[in-house]
Image 1: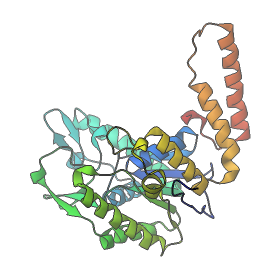
Image 2: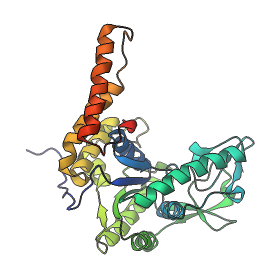
Image 3: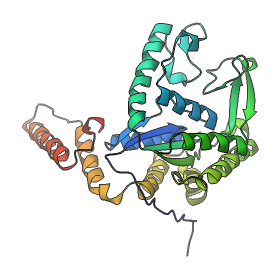
Image 4: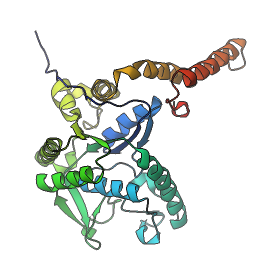
Length: 315
């Protein structure tokens, strides 16, 4: 007897290996899965502009990464009386001065641009079809930074608009593989009905582009949480974000879908070493802990020798 719907997800024919460079962009789902990937030593960049939500902002960020064009004073705006930021970044980048902000964002951009040149897999997590357009510049912003709503027009990117944005990315970077997913996080501030319309539009747009491009693939994170898990016990207290257990479950599904099975031994070794690296001793001056340190250092040496593509520094 079956008590839940279980998705049958077909694995990719061409899949991710440790030697690939990965880029995760988009909603909190990109943060969650991308962080797990980095924590296992994959060569991954995760949201170098902070969390992004709509297709237009994600596309603008990719174009900036490709060009590597630094931010200047003309991109900076003041937030309240004490902070500065840009409309391309989220609130994590707030700084107390223009100089500090430009140093921070351009350092991140330079590193991400260098990574993007070699990136082979781009994982995009689309969060919403709703966006905010700056009335002055007529550009869609990545974040409103709690500024007055009078400065923006709230717009809905319909299916055709989102599909066109995604198609332009695929046409611009045919040498890269794209994995699209629609974030299962609900945007309750939009309203439940509006959230459903937003997600439906994104799903239709992704379906359209995946049907037209060989380098476009869809991973059903949205369906896994809403249809397979389908229970509020898999949500945190805010009733929006998935629990750690749900994230791990979706991650395991992503591994089966996108990671080459040949990398399982490296992932297991990376996990074991990660646990050793994060071990907090009760008695750091003891002989037992010194033995543990020797074993840990030996593990590091062995892992680097057996799996040279694992980025040990990220574990």
